Length: 231
Image (cartoon, rainbow, N blue to C red; front, top):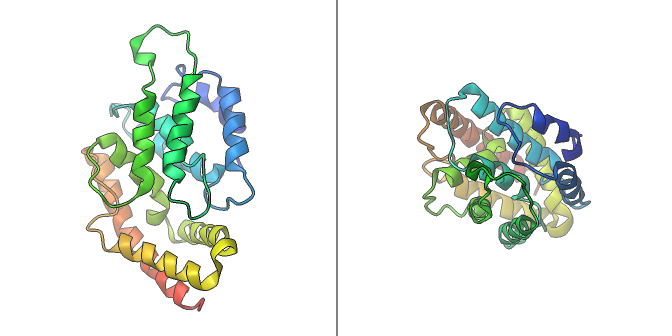
């Protein structure tokens, strides 16, 4: 399994550029400590790194796309599950607060205004991952939600692996019956949405997200069938 420490050297080479990201080794170690906590089975380093990989892939397909608050998006991806307790409704809020606290100690010797990081925006984007179905007004937040939910629209093989990890994460706390009920409720709420993945007003990306939306509906309905066999 990859770690954030493994990615430290990559920050210098990927096309997006991370010259603004200071104290990378310290940050990588901090992220590894949190995302390798024993109770995590899905919300791990692998989930965050896959989100980051997907973001890089989207941007590499069209280098001309200038996503607003790109630095803040990257940091939101890194921090959005840094505080995680199974079943807690406070995870996103606490993760956003953690990012803001980290931002107080984030130092940069750059004077270029383009290198300024808006940590309040990082927190705002993290809070979008509550996934409560409410209106999401900003492009950055909609994009972040799509990135975070990528597994729903992934291949059948990847979806099976992810759903298995989620089961192992929740079962020790809730048991079979409560897990099946809660998971099915979540799936029903997602399937009922007109669209799981939000449009982000970038045609190439929106075509991909629409295809992921179609795949997600199939994946989730298949999982519901599997859930019925658990009880």
